[in-house]
Length: 492
Image (cartoon, rainbow, N blue to C red; front, side, top):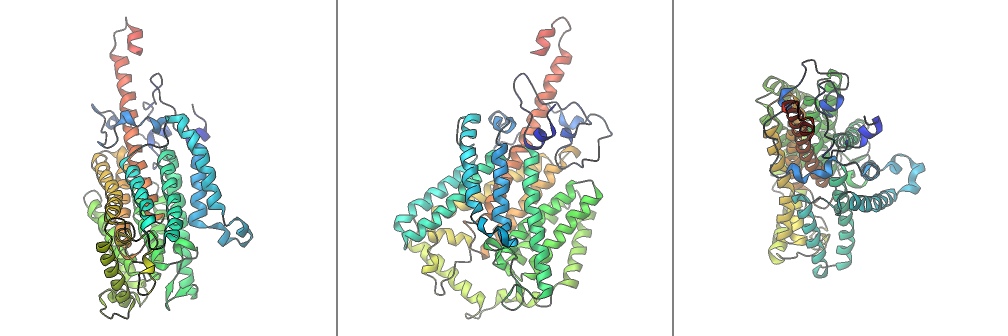
């Protein structure tokens, strides 16, 4: 029996002589990580977990997923967790006494990678597992590197490349170390807590008239990634569907209220940023949720949609409608006109430099107003080339396909609902990102890489759970069916 610490950080090892047990219907492990800890099953053994064939996702064969069921990478996961706090929360900004630690993200990342490499080599004999997302990201990183000699400003491109390389390395670490359901949940809840803080502080600042730009737009109370209202809105848009999915996956009424409050708080934070791209992304992300959940939760979906719609109409600030309608503004002197101009310029640069672009981070040198492209897709194509843009789009779309396969396979059965709802929530989050990033230059920032890493690990966790459950049940059945005079054969 593993200790509570081991259960929190690691899977129980599975070898040919020791299979994970699934026969106990009252065990906490059989409930999964989104089941309520205070509830136990009352219906006895769940036959849905025993199937003739494992419902393996075609992209993740069970036979190639041994890395998920081996102990290891506990220290590396702690490093990823602390790194996420340092990058997303930036505690030295919230607590001035910690300002000497403002380089903590770099040192945590360096220490994490130094621990990860020998551990990974010892566990699996390679530097990383190789799902298609990892391969695509490595190719994108190579494309960025090859564009540096042809950049308008090679030194600026090299600095931008080193920043992006940090993203690539941490993504690879995440894909390999998030190998248990508890780790997946812990990192997700950390992102959710940070998002609630951002939404709550934005709402409070709006009421107090603090941290405003352009008259009435609230900036993030945390700098760097969230200093821009549009970027903060983009992040909150990606977290709202996940909060809704958590709400639907739990049976604890108090937790449902908590997740609903989180979703409302983040929606309020999006609204007070007055981000047009954020509002469009939020509408489409919630639309994806409504469309996919309408069959299993028709009444709940309709009621929640009506409540949210009425609340938005009643409590939204008066300037939201005019801000939203400015998307169709034709004035070239307006912010919309400036963004359209930069979008056109990015398309022209893409056509003139289709192979390697003008170098990562160099578009501002060609902008009329020294601005970014305000479009992640043309940001990649203009700065790194068309092939890199294709890699970037595939990097986002392939997880959507995996999550869709997971949604279909986990749709039936009470015990699989946690994966079903999370697959839908992650799909809505990625689609929200794709929409919002059409209006923001965030292709080389952290947002999508965390989402894709969590998506890859979610699909693999479902795959390995089903593989373990089936193998354990099959071994038990063989033992029961074997003749009594051949006990050794029954245990083989």
